[in-house]
Length: 237
Image (cartoon, rainbow, N blue to C red):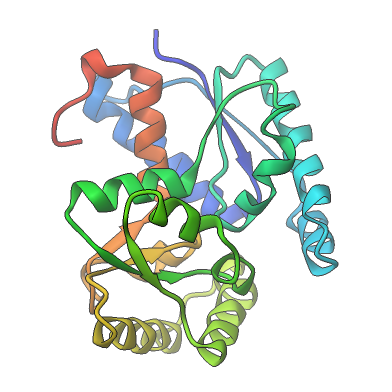
């Protein structure tokens, strides 16, 4: 039997995309309508934001740990968090977590290496792009990166927090991301990290000036591989 996947969710739209990917693509490995057992727990995003706005990443970690403990009780075998920003809190909880985690930036960085990318643009909330969540993982694999400019960072953050997490998707938001990604391309980037789990709801290879690394779906696919085990994973999955 596949392992039981535990999802520590934060924002509804990103968690829903991760869940749908796990279930929908499970059939690729397991057969029609099949997927690993999945459990999800989430505290309100407002609880996370209260901690983030006062720079209390230890508090963010305690919320994640609370979800982890509930999921362990529910029978999960390992954990994922489909929220890039919240990974800033991982150092506070890894040693106390009841279960092991797949780290979203590690998954994305590994995929970048597999695809031969060398210099990545990072998009996401202002809290993420100003952090070391991606730089640490990219540097560990010899990859370079470019962050958005401060003004771009603020506008992207506004789009994410005021629109995408609320399920609001506009042409203007797409144009904003296209402008930012074009600038990253001009700075020598050969791919862009969609480093907020809602960004793939409006951006993809179809409308991006650069190839995309979809952190949400990459994490879900890594969880599927982990749950199923290497014996049944297709080479091109």
